[in-house]
Image (cartoon, rainbow, N blue to C red; front, side, top):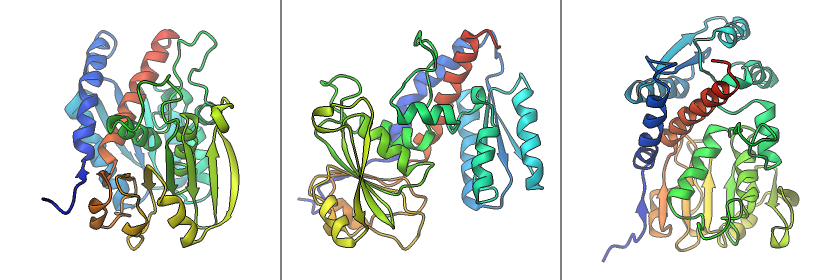
Length: 320
């Protein structure tokens, strides 16, 4: 009998479940995009992780019938103009920027320079506002779907694949009764993810180096969107307490040395790591029922899925 009862699930096997859906949509667009939709990625830094992500994106695009163009911008100050040019180019269907560029508030400004109709990463303020307010469409008729930021969406899709979501409950309430811990509260992934999980009915403990917050839709899911409550400053004891009771533990700490102690993990929990570094030790397999060590390939699938939604929206508006 194995001393490691859990299973490791790779992002590559989860992403395969979206290949058919994405391929079918690309085929339906052949009349307007015979060579496939065009995604443009802007790289204006020397980050090896960004270079690796760009390569993955390019290979995945080409294997699935998309066109991908990586545009390197040597002078960061010229990036804004390059994005605006791509916004205006009708042949460009999607735009993404490999962050960080400046590593400060200027990056947040650049996120908003990308046209909403081409923002495959879902970083536009309209998409963010909809996400936080649990609004799923861009119009009153509910024909234009709002999109979600790629990595948080990838984690949600991974949890759906792992059957953490209860399909017997109504859409929007399918995490009711689940407790989740998210160790990261970045504006790009951690905070949006905590909000999405809470909007779907979970009680979420959002862990940051400074403090701990609880995201929830209230007792009996009485609120339409999540509420946030401060629980005080961070401590290892508090992390241990919340993890030991959590059905799902999700990590995204951008540090090679950071590891969640395996003894904090509840027996039979689901553990997902979205950091480019492993935040769990291999011994986690002795406690977790299911362990997903990285999310990269699912994130790229979500990016391409977002792009097809944007193309569909523009098609409905007669903008293609």
